[in-house]
Image (cartoon, rainbow, N blue to C red; front, side, top):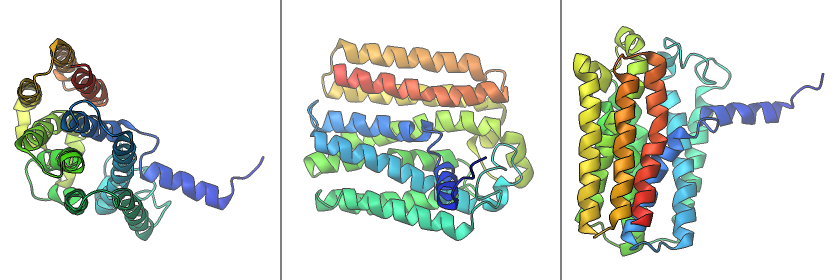
Length: 287
């Protein structure tokens, strides 16, 4: 039986560390970022910007995963779903996770060097937000809201890259993304609620308590209403509202998945948010 070369084996561990095998996280960042690019450029984004922001989104999400695992390495071993991650299980060292995160962040930053100063400045702030998010779970009752800012920072950066300013529309979109992240990451947190209670990590699922399902649905509603207001501001057409209607139907389906608080169904609802984000984005493109 042929043995796997040590270098290849290590690269496979790094790939698992940054969740290349689980692209859902990158997609949840990508849809709002691309939506912002399309809106900021009136439906005609520069293809180079699309490539830069798409690749940069994947790189920064990967760097965020590495930093998150570094920060949570002593907690993850007590959670069934995360106990076998490369860092938690001891297959790689803590310094390796930090090194991977730094390298990926630097590569991501190099992509935006040709862009204007405002975009570069916002990228530094984005790295700070992403790097500090894992520690908010120690004390902040709704760390998912902070995650929404981290996951949505591509929105003001996209506007800055296209318009050299960050108008009010970008901030409204960022706020809408915070509510969307609260919805889908609460579903995610509902999977680990029992473990998180034991180890003392704060999550929205714990904070909302028995009102968790209601909170998720209200967050979906606020997200879609704010996106609708932006669509009206840009005078988008009927296809945009069709996309929103499909997104609303997807959110309603998520209620059916999470209402009994079954772990597997809550996780399925979280993963299914890819289609909600895609519906909104496609609506914007066609609208």
